[in-house]
Length: 113
Image (tube, rainbow, N blue to C red; front, side):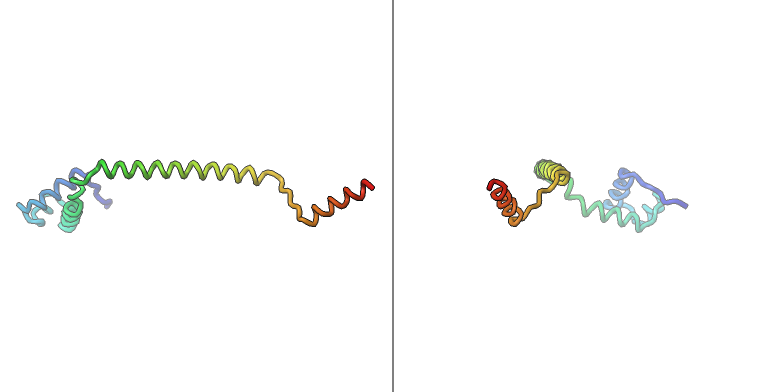
C-alpha cells in the first residue's frame, strides 16, 4: 500500500479544525480518515509557523535580493579567475633560474670577444 499524499490546502484545513478544538483529535481523525498523530503534527507545524503570516516580507525579500546580487557578483569574479587560470595553464612556462640568466649573459659576452 502506498502512502497518501495530501495537499497543503487539506493539511491547513485539518490543522485549523484541530486548532479550533471544536472536535477532538480522534473525531477529526475519523472524519478525515487519517491517523491522529498526523493531525497532531500538522497542528504543531501550523501553530509553530503562524508568526510567518505576519512577518515583514518586504525586508526579508530585500535581504534575499541583496544576498543574491552579492552571490552573482562573486560567481562572476570566480568565472573570470577560472578562465584566467585555464589560459595560464595552456601557456608554456618559462622556468629559468638566476644561474641560467647569468650563464646566458656570460655566453653573450664570450661570443663578442
